[in-house]
Each structure stands twice: as structure tokens, then as C-alpha cells.
Length: 436
Image (cartoon, rainbow, N blue to C red):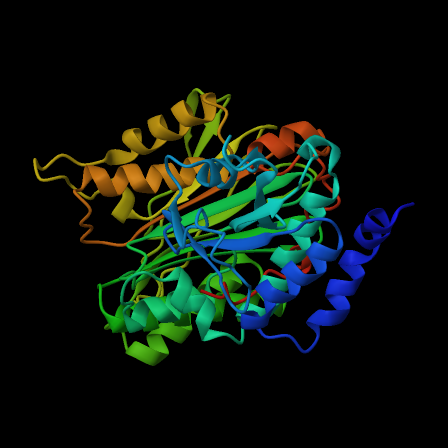
């Protein structure tokens, strides 16, 4: 083993050892220094903004010299090679004019953070298996450091954010998550002005818990209502309450706090991974739909109870539906379906499901499909939404694990990733804080 091979064998451990007292601002320089000793003469970190439209250089204390004129401070996700690596989760050469430079997707588990630009002089990336491992470790370090750094939020936010939105994003779990049998991805807009929508998921043994909330109003009070509803649901769920007990507990908390003046609609659901049985309840919300075989839309129904917080005291109902392997369960709020363009036309549920079906047929990873969906939705409404729009998509593979190549395609994961390694620390306990 030569010195470069030896350095690469130790770089991951060396970076972890160096990270314990490291700040986010020190991360780029520390990574670049260790990578240079391992034969990667330049490593630059680019992070996606909140709406995943652009990639921004995390400069920190990294040395970008005068000879690095081709190093851009920001790049578009659409129409660039770096953006292509981010969208598809694949490694791409930077350009013909920058020989030995490669774009590597930056993933924490299945959550897309950005890309790395890595120098690999005289080597083809196919033979350099350490790049994806390096990117995976950098992503993990980013996630651990961003929680205590306002610099991260300032970089990935490109506009002023409302206080209600600040509360919402701090409470949301990661927007993308996967295990070897299920994947979940979600989007929420308008990112800087969202106030009353919230989504959540978590795992307990063989069950996946799902919830979507839509609080009345579009102000700070709506954000408080949604935050209280989500926190109450987590609290009851984590104490072992079933769906109806959880729902009634949320309703009681909202009624107690707001005396019937504020309420939230919601769908709460549990999916049993071993059997595909979906158990769910509806409190005044649009019911979920299932996309089956990438062509058929199955409309689910459960008698709705009144929205949570109305204080009417009417009980909810439980519905059980059997999912089939490969089914995609779609939960959403009315801001995605009922918003109208300047001509008065609704986007509609058909527009939503048609878009998802068409882009699934194109073979795009699920997170990229939802990114393009929200971009299309904003364009349809000329960039102005009068209501929060949330979409959460779950795909259940079945009682057995995904083949590795199939899961990689669905999530945009690098080829070296396996179902075992995609489950990061988030898989054990989805965080209460997305770090944005």
C-alpha cells in the first residue's frame, strides 16, 4: 500500500477525530486539508438552498486561491453539471476544461444536502471508490454541526423568513428518508412564508407513523396551531397511544389552548411494513390517495371527524386499507390542489397525480420528482401561493427489501450505497429539527 492509499484508508477516521471540537466554519478547511493528504488536492462543499434551486459554496476557512477562477460562489441546480449530480445522485465530471474535477452528491442517508467538488488528478472516478464515502462523512459532519450554527441557515436561506416559517422548519423531520422497505419524501411551500402546514413521520419497530396537518389561517397563530398539533401528536404517540387516542389528545390540547377559535385538519396513519396494512383516521382533511402500478389512482375513504380543536366532541373513525407492493401513498394539503392560476384554474388532484405518474415513468428519483413538482406548481401559480402547499409521498416496496439498484434509482443514491448503509442516524429516531 502506497502513501496515498494509506492516507485514504485513514481519512474517515482522521476526520471524525478532528471533528469533535470543530465548528461549521472550520469544516471546509479541515476536510480540504485531510483530503489533500489523501490525493484529492481540492474538495469544495456546495449546499442546496431551502427551495433546492441553487447550490452555494460553503467557504469557511478553505483556501480558494487566485488560480481557482473557475470556482463559482453559487450554481444553479437546473442546467449545470453540479446540479445534475444533485438531482440524480450520481457522480459527474465537472467539465472537459477541468480535467480531474468531479461533482459528487452530498447525502445524509437519503437526504440531499448538496454536492462536493473533488479533485482526482489522473484518475477516473469509477476507480475511486472513496469519493462517495468521503461525501457521506462530510454530510454527516454537516448535519452534526449545523444545529449550532446560524451560518448554515444564512447560507441556505435566500430570502427573509417569517417567524411562523421559522417554527415550522425547526419542527419538521428531514424531507427525505428511506429504509430497505420504504421511502418517504416531502415538500412544503411557500418555503419562506409557510405557516399552517406540517408533516411528520417516525418508525416504531415494524410500523411507520405518518401525519399531515393543515391549521386554519396563514399567520403566526396558524404556525402556533400547527406546531402545537404536531408536538401533541408526537407526545401521545411516544407514550404508546394508538391513532384515535393520539388524534383525540391533539384535539383536546388545541381546544384547551384556543377554546375553539383555532383548529387543524389532519390525517394520521400507521403503515405496517411486514403486511402493508394501512390504518388511518381523518379529521376534516382531504383523504390520501394511492398510486398503483404507476397508472391507477385509488381514492381512499374514511368518514371524517370534525377538525381537531373545534371542541365538538365527535369521535373519529378508523379505516384499514391493504397496500400492494410498489404502491405510492400520497398525503397532501389543499394548498397544492385548490390553488388557482391567474385564469382561475385549479391545479387539482388530477394535476398532482398526473405529474407524479409522468415523472416516475421518466425514472427520476422520488426527491427530484417532488422538487420538480413544487417548481411546476409555483410556475403554474406565477410564483404566488395564497395557501401552504404540502405533499408527502411514501412508497412501500413490500415485505421484502428493495434490490439495491432499484432503491438507488428511487432515491438518487450513489451506486456503492446499500440498503444497510442508507439508514443513517435519522433512521433510529427522526429528528425534531431539520436544521434549516
